[in-house]
Image 1 (cartoon, rainbow, N blue to C red):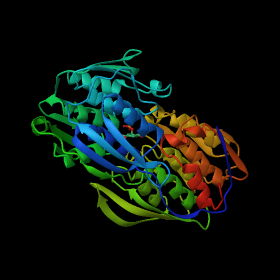
Image 2 (cartoon, rainbow, N blue to C red):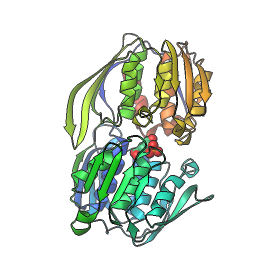
Image 3 (cartoon, rainbow, N blue to C red):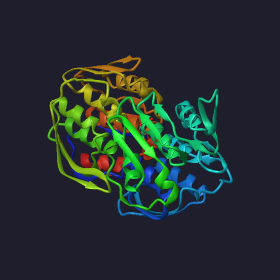
Image 4 (cartoon, helix red, strand yellow):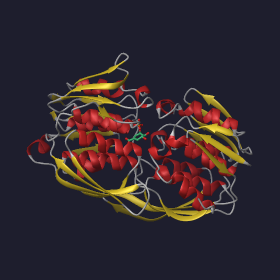
Length: 440
Ligand code: S3P
């Protein structure tokens, strides 16, 4: 699908964005392992999260869905059957394009008393799985992939697991969560060390369910003993708006003249707010208002205004704190005065697309001065952008970032591959049109 975006004069709006993708996945998965009814409000009805629902249903879990007034969100009631209540699936479990579904479910399935196969679409079948196969095997799991255990489909024969001490080679919340979920089924505690803090939604939810889990810096210890004896209680969860979705509107407001957006009720968990810190460091006028705790997660309203930006260097611990925001950061950097250097971000090459190569090739088409590095990119700004034909590589975050670039670029920008946008943000096009002041 091709989406044509025209240059915009300004953006203005007071809006909310659909629920957080990472929290929606986790609330549903942990709801299935609790005993009783987990209620989830503002659940993200994106293609990725619907894949989690589909897989859990195939594992015998009843999930009731109700669309809410806002496009792209719904209420869920998950009828959890307890840690040992999942049933053997009749067929392969189809994770669609969702890496989170596949990796987190693999951790849960490693502890079951049956075998299952996890597969997904062509894009997901290209994503690295050795990073979960290796640690789960160390815990005693029987799990394999194809192509030398590198890729999906994954075959998981559930069985007895034991705790372990493990240093994660990459800062990945999906890998960390897969191990923590498997650790619920293990004999003995599991100790994890992350190279840098990654999103901690799984840890927060597990603690809220009474699991013994302690975090000290980049170290996490989970002791499954209390959980083995008593059922996990179901939670009532209101999912905050997804900061990774709000990011597109925040950057649009910073880049266009005479612009202002307020995005309400957005999750501002400090493991996710790297982009806000970086933009502020670049000179962006961003204010966090009304900060509070909702369902164990920090939530706030974020106000962003037209700003004069300057280039920055990004690397180290900041990278996992904004891992999904590099495509939109790159768009911002094309309009910043001076050099922006992103390094130590080679993980971007194994996302929904090779985001380093895709950002560089597509922003070049729009007139940006950008150079590829093995672990990032360098942007020399500011450069005027000119509308052109670009290809989002069927990567939702790239498509939305190119749309924001299209608001800044002169003329029209045609984005190929925009059909991927509902993977994380159903209704994005309508909301973007609304803040630009165009009717759909
Ligand atoms: C996610 C973790 C990140 C992120 C992805 C969602 C999660 O992936 O890019 O969009 O929900 O745990 P990695 O764990 O591969 O860094």
